[in-house]
Image (cartoon, rainbow, N blue to C red):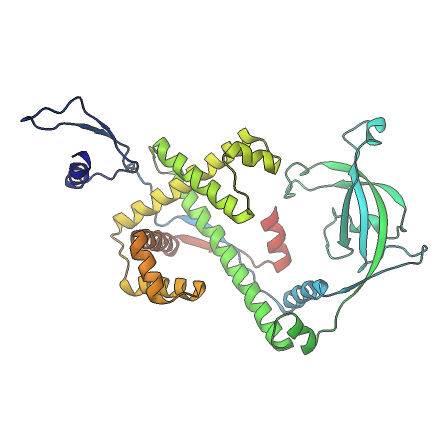
Length: 378
């Protein structure tokens, strides 16, 4: 009786439950109306702030011929022949593959440093131009040689636990290898899954340009949505946050191939603190929920609609990527009743496009590809 009347009631009152209702009733008596109480959480109402004319800045970066060549050099390294240099008098030079052991010793006493375990590393020397990399410190060292080095990391260093600090390491070279790169010819290009050298250059450039476009767009859009969120009032039900936490957690497990029964078990397997990991999950969930609520509200205010043509494009894309026929994809969507979810994702995208197109965006001075990547890491 409750199920047959509850959803009619919420539709009539234009309510939007986000969890299954808790049904309570005292008794059922013959010849008397059946009465029950349904308790549930609804989609929260929000007081959205300004979402047009938001000011932001956008980076400008273009992939050059040198960037394309550098990326091809990285591809060549995957196919390189590595030959150990046997001469004991040989020293580390730029272009060599240096294998070494490293341990930090500035945060322990001299006696304790003896018991700190070395960790194994290897790098192709000379690839980085940063002043705070190991490269320049191991140049000229021989195999078997040990050396104490100090590195001052910048305040913007991407590893926050090292940022702004001067760290002392003990490094021991264990092997010096010559890296013999293949020639850049059609034979190599075909081996690397391209049709020719020209095809490789074209596709590498396309990849770099797409990378830049996506990253730059993502940065600006994140900045815009964060500024809208700062000016918006929320009253988010706990159930919505917990549901999003669980969704994020499941996606992370699927991505790395771990399946555990709990966040605590997963954190233990990954060697991280369960309480800190749960807090990070919650922060990510709250941010995700706020993003969705803001964009949904914008779509509602602007009366955005999904065109059938755009929906068909998505279905066709799913079909092409999955290798299944259109009929199979359509049957699956109908069976899972997932069309509303697909359309909702499209609406959120429309809303974000609207915010971006109506924003006041200032183009920054152009930067090099290397500078762009470095800033992204920091």
